[in-house]
Image 1 (tube, rainbow, N blue to C red):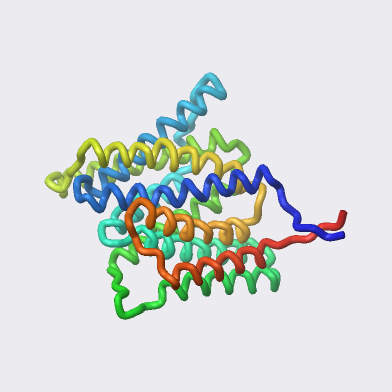
Image 2 (tube, rainbow, N blue to C red):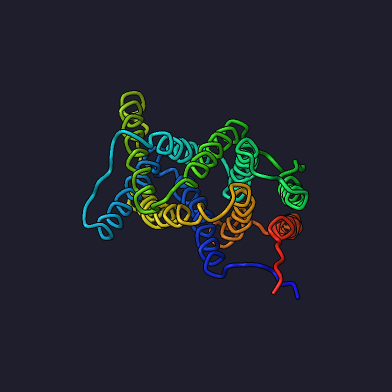
Length: 291
């Protein structure tokens, strides 16, 4: 007899982390769309609150804090690149569309990296990836009422590259708590350098209020900190290509959340693309084992 091979604990963790990733888009859009917080302030609060939570978790588990300053800067920079471009792109981009662009580019980037690292692209995975990506293309295909800022789309493109490389680097993790915390300490260092530049040239652009501060801190301390921590624990157990495929679920979750919290419209195109994406993911990840 043949059945679908799966690990319930791993699937549960994957679902939680994908929900957290989708929630980051909603929180960013909710905050930045109010125009009561600038994109840099949102990013700064998100990164510093995530770093603080991860440092607390690390200290709780190890009773000390031993974070070196000689390595892991590439990972930190890639997260900073992802986070800063992510925030600025949402100045003029809907949450659902932004997430679609983000994870479509993430998937392509991670697949290219995986091929360079000699991961095998099987015919089944290729078919599944093509179908799933086709679902995204179908949803994004320009329509009469479809408009998009190409500049902000480009920022999301850069954000995706940052996240993809950050995820590939995280696959090497042998200690999720240490490696995730270390990456955020380094990301915070880059944030400080950017802050000096930002305050010197754009001091008058700083905006913040209690509501948007709360959203940024929630994004950092919960959905980012715990999301990345869990992601670091998952990635060593799966292939890079598999990681790229499962993240295509994030846009679906984000669009559903945007309908609930941002009053974005549920359309027939969204329904069809959701079915196509889920079908593609199922084909790409389906495995059989004999019992």
